[in-house]
Length: 77
Image 1: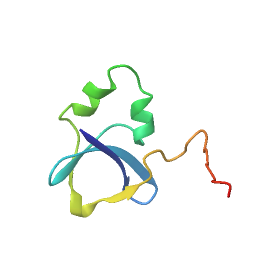
Image 2: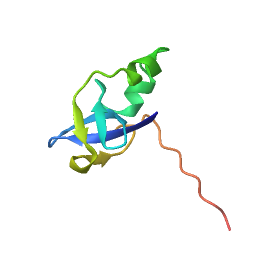
Image 3: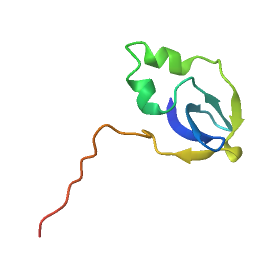
């Protein structure tokens, strides 16, 4: 199962499950919200309910829109 976050409209994002030629909107603002939603998150992500959008019509957004923490690794030379 492939998951992503896409832009829906001007100011809204949504988690989606990607298929071959379309994606299915999930009722979460991003993939991070889906992952933190509980133990049965994979069953809810695999459910075949939700609006379908063509892959050509979507715009991808960051997987987690507002991360709680950002960690950077910088190599020291």
